[in-house]
Image 1 (cartoon, rainbow, N blue to C red):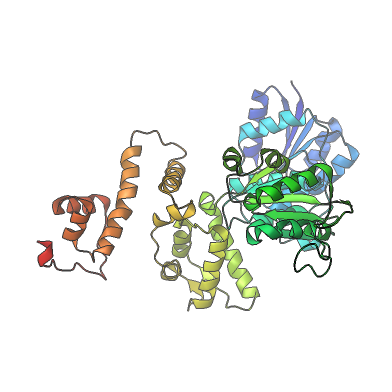
Image 2 (cartoon, helix red, strand yellow):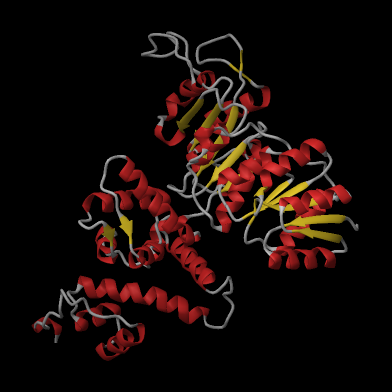
Amino acid sequence: MSATILVVDDDAAIRTVVRQALERAGHDVTTAGSLGEMRRAIERGLPDVLVTDVVLPDGNGLDAVTTFVRDHPRLPVIVLSAQNTLTTAVRATEVGAYDYLPKPFDLDVLVHAVEGALGREGGVPVAPLGEEDAALPLIGRSPAMQEVYRVIARVVANDLTVLISGESGTGKELVARAIHDLGPRRHAPFVAINMAAIPRELIEAELFGHERGAFTGAQARNAGRFEQAAGGTLFLDEIGDMPMEAQTRLLRVLQSGEFTTVGGARTIRTDVRIVAATNRDLARAVADGRFREDLFYRLNVVPIALPALRERRQDVALLARHFLDRAAEAGLPRKQLDAAAIALLEAHDWPGNVRELENVTRRMAVLSRDAVIGAPDVREMLGAQPREATAAAAGDGSIEAAVDALLARLARDNSGALADGTLYDRVIAEVERPLIRRMLARNGNNQLRTARALGINRNTLRKRLDTLGIDLDPDAGERPSGAGDR
């Protein structure tokens, strides 16, 4: 379907490649390099789709979009921006943009967005951002986080149930709070409950409340989390740890919108938005019979998968600097990171994710003697933990989890490709290196005892040390062989 597309960007190279991509898709394309040129082009004829950058030489593209959408509500607008923050994504949705694409973007994604926009009539406005939202808690400019921002921006204006998945420490509650704080329920309560932290027998009373005398120790009526969150958002953290009997009752509440307190008879209508989170594989839990399938589908209306920090290493420096700034605001000495320190932080696998990075950064702010934090400080704070040792810690502790983490890293380091004919040797080398290091450490660097423990001869061990580039710990030295070693 041919259409007229207006592309606005102050970068001539971007205008050229976008025009060529859209023309190859069969569309007529007009380009502009400023707001003034955009307005003149629209005066000559309204396009079918407007694609515009945010930062333009003579003004802000989002401000202009507000006017265009008001005057031409049927005009779909796609916003491009190098200011890749959650604020930008939400504001693009706020002003009525059909879609938001962070720079750098994939041309195929842009073409697909244009095709989608041709079948829609503008966007859906959301609650406006106030001054207090200038510093939102989610930080990251990586493509993985940009996708998270885009999903958040699309769901804040409605009451669809959201299921956030991700490893511990990735910021699941921050996402839940952002959805609440940016939506129409922002002035109502945000109530969080951690299913893993509540005894099984108390979960229903915590969720739905209880009447006086409902059970031993119930001295007075107590409002549950559903009542406490009335009109707002209820965040069900670690939903995968919810016992089956509580899952059944939660499902009935989500289906009917009604509940009764424990020991009560009066039906209470509920008006809350549900956001759930888990660090478990709920689909596998359903297959294993540990989680109700019907509840899973009720919760998984809008899934948001948070990436592990090792999957967005380019955000590590940005996050670390943010945490140092926060530490300084809290009264700790103001510190900076040099290039070597940042390189070490980016190389670490962060099994504890963003939470671990925040703790490490805060310790450096307290304990580092110099105003500029260097590589030695980072090594000390990380406990000189070898990178390969963190792969297993990032998973569930099994060999399979360690291999999965290793394959993911090898694919990332090789631009997604694994089938290059060297995979077996690379994986064996990655596994062999920490194995030999650990056995050397256990045997005080004694190569003969280490070789015997591994079931290889000493010459073979020496060759493997050389091939794998393993240096003996200079602080340990090599203990002399005793009589039992001969």
